[in-house]
Amino acid sequence: MTPGIQNGTGRQVPPVQAVPADRAAIRVNILSKRFGATEVLRGVHFSVARGETVALVGPSGIGKSTVLRIVAGLDPAFDGEVQRPEAVAMVFQEPTLLPWRSALQNLTLVHPDLSDSGARAMLARVGLKGREEAFPRSLSLGQQRRLALARAFAGAPEMLIMDEPFVSLDPELAEAMLGLTEELIAEHRPATIFVTHARDEADRLASRVLELRGTPATLTPHLI
Image 1 (cartoon, rainbow, N blue to C red):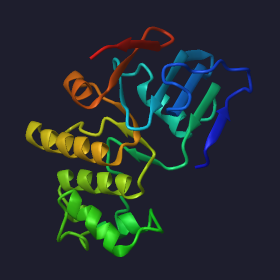
Image 2 (cartoon, one colour; image 1 turned 30 degrees about the vertical axis):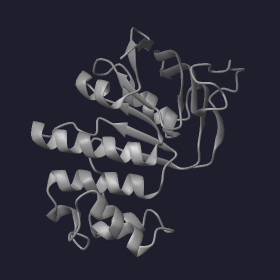
Image 3 (cartoon, rainbow, N blue to C red; image 1 turned 90 degrees about the vertical axis):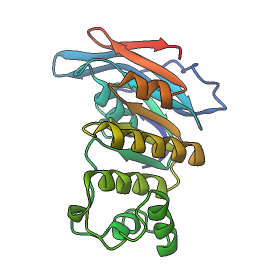
């Protein structure tokens, strides 16, 4: 994914001022997003600095994952612009691992410049030491989530996008994964955007909380 500006319709877009321009790693101006004749997003403007974590909350179906897809560059069909860095990592609700590749290969194939020793060190960092040759199907759900985190951070991302990364986990495992994610973000300091339905997760991880509301959905900032 290349850095720079991505435009939907090519309209002139005003600058985002939430973070000073010299600090912003991600700058988002979504003027409008439609699915057919239905406008689902309007006036979604925010920016995220390097090392800052922004949580995106709101009711189910309001468009949080749509915002993430636009920010990640997966959905270019919108009116506005997004500026993002080159090194981007995503963590989805499901681990989306390579099923017929080992845990180690899930890192080295995605990150060709990553050394074998570097991949092993990252697996150890997330608690998977000794499981380097295991296939995802032989790992527990918690281990699969840890592998997905290892894959995301192994590339030293400047920008991290997470879509409900702790959903469907029991409370003890969710707490362990939340703590691990918190540590990795603090160590690597990417500009992070994540979607969650759990306000306690947002309050714990995020520097700022943004809420989508209305029809079409727009942003309401919250102070923690």
